[in-house]
Length: 194
Image 1 (spheres, rainbow, N blue to C red):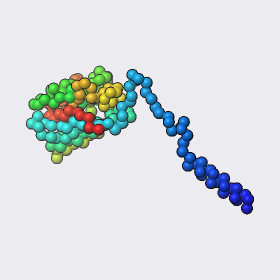
Image 2 (tube, rainbow, N blue to C red):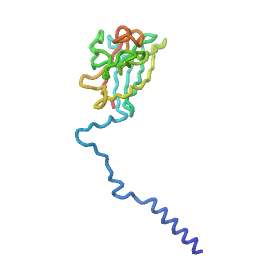
Image 3 (cartoon, helix red, strand yellow):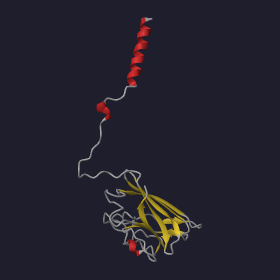
Image 4 (tube, rainbow, N blue to C red):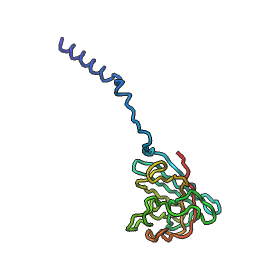
């Protein structure tokens, strides 16, 4: 009987110890970053570009979200001509109609050649072609490795911002500097949304 009482007492003490709060030393540990050192971008931050045609018609959005390895792009369009369209992030956050040339060239912070088939890599703003269905809708999701939304390596939202462009034709993924994808059909300026 004494053995059972001892075992029960020991079990109660063991369970009570499991519920003890952590010591001050264990709970007060805080990570600090020395002054002048950059912090890594916060995962989950987002920026959105609302896409419009030259006549101001809304045709979709491009959204980028910060991840641990870079950015994720999600593109959704509607009311666009069916077929394959070159799509790119451009270097300047301006979309002046009618030609959207104010958006500048492709986002290329690593000074690579144009196109996913290029021997010298590709611009960070280069993507596979967007396939738009007969009903005018299209969807594309792609990662952008080693990029950041802002205040990090290869920041998208630098001093002059960035824009997203949908071109009239398909990108051949080789011709420098723009893939021979034709006129700019829609443009949107990236703004931080979360």
